[in-house]
Amino acid sequence: MTAAPSGPASATARLDDPGFAEALMAWIGDLADGLARSEGQRDLLRLARAELAAKERSNREVFGCSLFGTLPAAIFEAVAPGRPVPLALPAASSLCFLALDILDDLADGDWPAHWGDLRPAEMELTGVLILSVLVPEALARTTDDPALLAALGAIHRQSLLRMADGQREDLAAADPADWDASWDMVTARRVLTARGPDQASGYAAMAAVLAGAPPEAARHLAGYAHYLTGAASLWSDLAELLGPEGRDLKQGKRTVPLAAHVNALAASERPAFLARLRAARTSEAEREALRTDLRASPAVAAAMAYRDIDLTMARAALKRAGLRDPQRLAGFVDALASLG
Image (cartoon, rainbow, N blue to C red; front, side, top):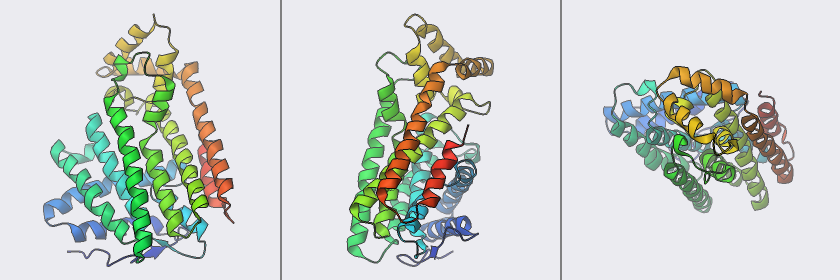
């Protein structure tokens, strides 16, 4: 058995280290393997970690950073530039993202191929195990200071409550093929961008507090992360909706660009479009026809203005945080702004 990391802040690294991503994944692997009670548990957690590694790598390639691994580490270093990052913090953030993504996939009926022939109950068990055991254990290893640890725990709980309420609204919402006039853009924007931005803002605040930032600076850095991740979510929504490999139409997912198009339709046009959404669940030909129409939709293009608003808000929050060297964090905003 591989021993779990041995105590609070048991390993540190710097973002500029060539092996930072590998060190983070190794720390997570040691934690999971050390805590698991059986080979069966270890096998489930290894499958989940393979998913995490792929998603973190994809995030870095697309956005210039991993929103749940790199970002809290970068905020820590921006606040305390002379100190290496306690790996336990980005590990907790990455594991929280992983657990919630697994549970969200299950709720949406999405079944990533790497889970193979495992049952949905095993996928659910893995998500719950990560969220209830690995995340708290990683957080417990961020610091030896009981008061600081209590502060981090309070931020984490509030972040989870916000995310859970957004997920509740998402689950309660109608299938896109049954949308009516009550599903307006305000509702769509609030519900559909809740989880990721709320998690990112919570861990950004934790990183700032752990690094010794004043409360006001921590609040602005949380806002920066919230808006940055909101912009990334909108870009991902558009790519999933319009790209040939996107699965949103097949899975009937609710997204802000799709909500914008539906709500821009005249009342007389909506039933026919909603019927096409239902047909797209099982027809690739209908999905491609819908993608063609949505690519030409002024409402879909207009919805992406929210991304520009989020990026502007992220820049403003970063400026108000008053960091001596915000260059790396500003670079993440620029990278997102440069995406088509």
